Length: 315
Ligand SMILES: Nc1ncnc2c1ncn2[C@@H]1O[C@H](COP(=O)(O)OP(=O)(O)O)[C@@H](O)[C@H]1O
Ligand SMILES: [Mg+2]
Image (cartoon, rainbow, N blue to C red; front, side):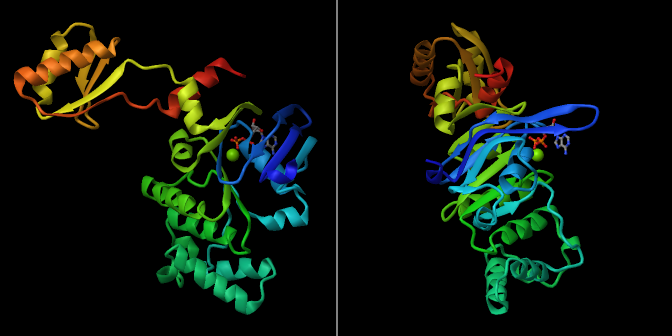
């Protein structure tokens, strides 16, 4: 059973016991992570890092069980399977990317020749070869994170565990890291945490949502969207005469609101009867000889689902 999963936990729990107070940071969670990219999503303080640290054996488990590819979490064999990128990786800033990767490789026990080859291969893969003489302290956040990602791959792990790999990066850095995660996912399973929905949505097919130490949902992104998104009254229309169509729509029957979005310059219409709206648009096209470029309902974003889930608490 456990062996079929990349990550399997049963009633995994962590209570931080400080003199003055107890924090139940992770509360009886049952993770079932299958091969592929799996998102671990939840707001700050939800318990993501605590869970991941237990999976890595970096902190003790209060109660419950955790297995990684059938091996007891925290055991040497389990750790060797995993490439781990902590939330705040620490680099020796005066090292170059080349030195850092070589050093990591040697820590993992690679022979000198293999360590050099692997380092070169990873510098190449992450397009860091040109910067390999520069100290990491001079790197941008995005580049540092690329070095971090590269270092997780040094010992050919079977599973990557990435704790908020995109936090503290600028938008370009974020995009780069997401691209690399997607590229890596073609060859290796990845468990990636984030508090940012749109990023999980881009990287993962499956997601576990955690809030307040408890799992609130496990499902595919697609199923979540299908099941939890309320059918919306929003329609998006694009024509070669949006200003004119907007003026017409503002007068039309059943239109609750209509505006031109600054973001995509398309017409956004709130209408509680889709068929009626289609009819209005068809008539307009025929009468005014307008070219209709698109007419659709936007897919509900996970953001809406998430907000609803958090409002309703468990279940
Ligand atoms: N070392 C610690 N000692 C006490 N409480 C902690 C410690 N680390 C985290 N916590 C608490 O545990 C909860 C979960 O934190 P964390 O796992 O870091 O969440 P996340 O990674 O989802 O933001 C929070 O309430 C946090 O304050
Ligand atoms: Mg965290």
